Amino acid sequence: MSKLRVALAVAAAQLRHDRARTVLAVVGVAVAVLSTTLLASLGVGVVETGQQKFDASGRDLWVTGGSLSEGPGGFGTSILNAHEVADDVEAREDVHTATPMAFRSVYVGNGSGEMQTLVGVGVPGGGPFVEISEGRSWEDSDSHYANGSYDGPMTREVLIDARTAELLDVGVGDEIQMGGSVESARRNTFTVVGISPTFSSFLGAATVTAPLSELQSVTGTSGQDRATFITVALAEGADPGAVENELQQAYPDYTVRTNDEQMQSVLQHNAVVIAVGAALVVLSVVAGFALTLNVLSIVVFQQREELAALTALGVSSRTLVGMVGAQGVLLGLLGGVLGILATPPFVFALNYAAETIVGFEGLVQTPETVLLLGVGIALVIGTLAALVAGWRSLKTVGVEQLAH
Image 1 (cartoon, helix red, strand yellow):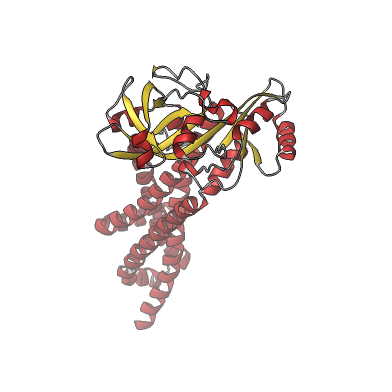
Image 2: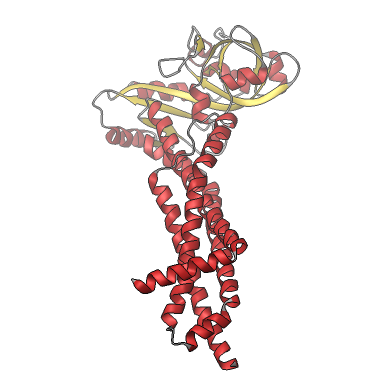
């Protein structure tokens, strides 16, 4: 213990001696820790937020088909004859409701001539799962469908989220244009009857929500009655796993998933983004290690005469390595503390940016395990750099002794 205290005291003195290099090394470790904690916090937040959104939807199963990458937010429109399939699913004893939904890119304008590309959401009716913050939902759910003829009356009513309202400078009672193309949008006018955050918070994008059949008509997907997926709410006491298997057998061309499975599928679809984030973490950790190692090596090189003298006086190699190692541990500890202290304000800034840009609140979440991970990485960086620099110090001291 006495040797350890001596090594730590000498290491601290050496680090104070050249403060510029010490600060540089500490900042390097802190950057590595900060990037790790932020990306890990983002990963945790994305999973938690996504799971919360799926759970809050009040749905138990998701029926999808084809690729998830064809439409907005990673969703395609791969279910055909969606109304009929939903009616057939809903007729089952264990199913309470089955709702077809479609997400499509649409052109939306406020009559000024300028068009914005937003996410169009189509649902048969408002229902209790659609939250209305201002105004109301549409009165007639899906009259335009007319049993598949698509010649019923159109409500020409839409819901928009707050960002769409701000983007188009419109509110409840105003008219907007919407369609699958610019020409289609100019021919189709809708009245905003309510403000709803439901789908914008689910997708993280500005949205315009219309009755499903009307969205299909203005986007040219009514011919095959296309939908993105069918959400299924089960009857009380029904076993999700058993119903999932039954539906999968009944509809082999589609994929039936639970909430957790659907969330995993979305994450797998974004595997490239996750891989890039992981690569950035690795690169930042490697950069922090390299910077700390270089600083320690320079310090050792500048101390070569003193270390050689200590060796000549009988100081053991273990003690010399301990002195250098202590410097690395101190650098890692200081860098880790700095990185952890810098994490909360960066998390706050990222959450503010995420809420402003994509509408998700609390997207970046930092549990204690993430902070402990950051401290652990800092100590690993410092310790590994110290071991390598300590090994180099023995070679340096040996050369100095031979020179004398």
